[in-house]
Image 1: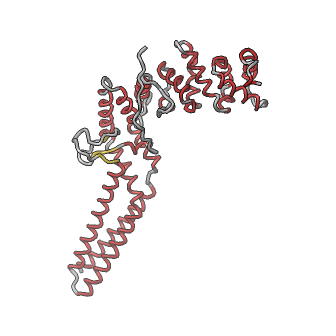
Image 2 (image 1 turned 120 degrees about the vertical axis):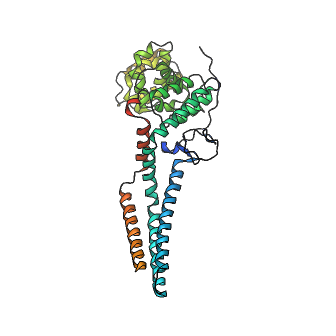
Image 3 (image 1 turned 135 degrees about the vertical axis):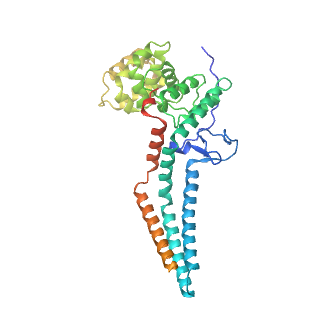
Length: 308
Length: 50
């Protein structure tokens, strides 16, 4: 078994929207999803978020429109036959340009998203190509620095959502010692098929950050329970997930049979929590779990003062 | 005469631009829509489970 390394992850900047991760070089228009300070294509420090780039473009377009309006206004003033005509032309031009400027200012927040959508559609091949380049960079770093590869894949996975990249992350995570203070996740890494590394990863996370065990991860474990039982530490994985699920009553109520099957293997503190939960809610539906808990208590904790 | 034509063109220009902006407002995608668009462009359905 490969020895696991103790590592510290670079802080992960979680954005509200995935597109906020995408940046573009103002100089060569290359896209990137990584955190680099300089563009890997041209070497310049001109990477900006896509939104900022599009906003600049829209503002420039609007300025051009105002300049065109100004030009037409100046022509109107120039060809005025009397002084009064020139004054009136100037006043009309100023009013119309002011009106245009006012409308543009109000419409800017609506133009930017529209322009962004157009940009994504027009630049789709380029975006895909550049993200593939990011991915090649990540894979190239694998031999020398697994941690860097994982961090890069984590960023890329914000936009690239397929099972291959998820499994790449899981395999790398399995080479690290997982700790309570790490920025871990399960849901974004779940795939549709069974994978031993993913099952093992969920089992480990259940021990160090049980709050990450939610419906989706429990359902994954349940769906592939038979496969997990065939793994070397399968029972441990299933028991640790069952122990983590006990943290919330809704999971115990939703998966009583699953917890019943592994109740004998869970640590005392988790069993105690389960025992007290059942005692406090005798009318809730526990299936055969309540009976099993009573048997285990009698067999293992009959004289334990915590259970009196 | 040229002055009036130019002013007419200017009024038309500002009116058309304003109308186009107002029309665009109806079709503006939300941030969630933008996210969906970008993700669906990067992750075609055929590749999601590769």
